[in-house]
Length: 253
Image (cartoon, rainbow, N blue to C red; front, top):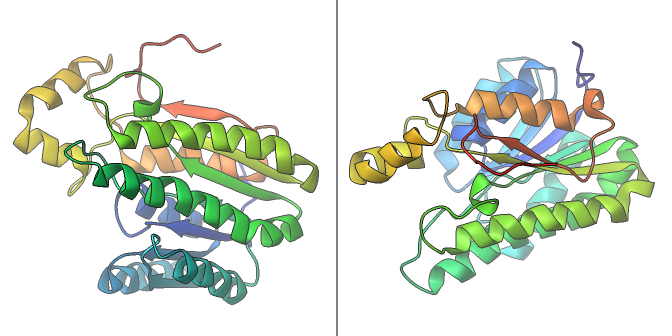
């Protein structure tokens, strides 16, 4: 299937590792010019070099998305450098944690506000695209109780609601908004590798909840994101796509 992505321009945050890195790699394979950021300059430079080897235009900077003004300025610079923005994937997350109130402010600023600021800043570019698409990365932690009460779960739930409402608001402008909620995803240096080594009981419990007996990979999530973002997914807007290999047990109508 031709996804119709060649020649598009995409901006992805948190794109040097894990799911974000898999997304930009697959976008480049499809002929998409890519702008990316992360917190570490060396990792950004390495990712940009690798993407350029695929024959696409790739630009990136080290950005702290909690610095709203610096982050919005980077988004504008990146859209200008790419010649527009057709696809936006806000992927950065502060991750889990429940040890202090600081987690709530950090997850609010990183997970929620970086997504909101990104959508608002890039909206004129997405509208000019004529076929703009935003895919917000949420989590199955937003859908069912898992672990302990923590900011990560609540903020990822907020993003699903935000995506649905924003889709209704900007649909008339030809912009689609969706979210993708991965279940446990295992990769080197990722959260579940850390949990396996430090909290094996939690890891084993999670594995028992997956009927197929394995966690997902960043590449599997990336393929879903690309389809939803692409013209091939043109009928999908205001939806939350659950990609969890059967991890969650709710019935979704």
